[in-house]
Image (cartoon, rainbow, N blue to C red; front, side, top):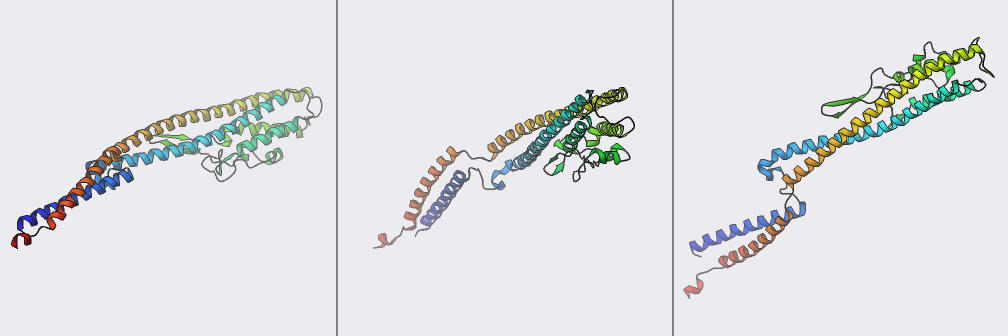
Length: 303
């Protein structure tokens, strides 16, 4: 084989290898949908891709966390509605002039309040503040409440509210504590039971003038407790609105980052298919050229 023929053969081999590589890359793009198999293949875009991926993960985490928080706030809203209805029923009960079943109704309202304050979400007590492992209410009957030195001793919640981050620069307290919401209300239940057991009681049959006068003072206290419950419920609604707005913002950022990463990473499938066809043709041509050159010999000319 002549030197010139050998050089041509080497050049044809290089063309064949280059065409095979082009075909492989195009086939990989078609199968994976990516421009390159790893970050090295993206060149100057690699840094932007790394940053966008990190931002996307952070945003997705916020969306997931905010979704869980929104579910918790919905559960809390139901608990607040039960508290509000219970206090409203208690106020209505105290407007009666017949005390026959008054304390039974008071006990029913107390039971509903305790159950609502001990509401749980995903294993955590929602009115317990930062201490979520224990029930915020230590009593289950009015008799137990009366046995305490102070009505506030009925609460076992932490003094500090639980907080959560809903954005890089925004944290919200998750909920008020049981003692914040129902401290006044426990005082009302305690005083009603103590009066019933005292010299002015019991409430049984038509109320006396003294009993009616006492009930009137407690109605004012129940109204104050009712307003506190509804105030806390309003705070919970404001949290819901804030979390919903934050989630919408994160979802919008997630969509933007998804489009950005697609522009950086995703292959143009039509272009990749065209490149594959061209590369396969180049492989066939290069292979044929290499085969012809590789078989070239001077023997026919030396005979």
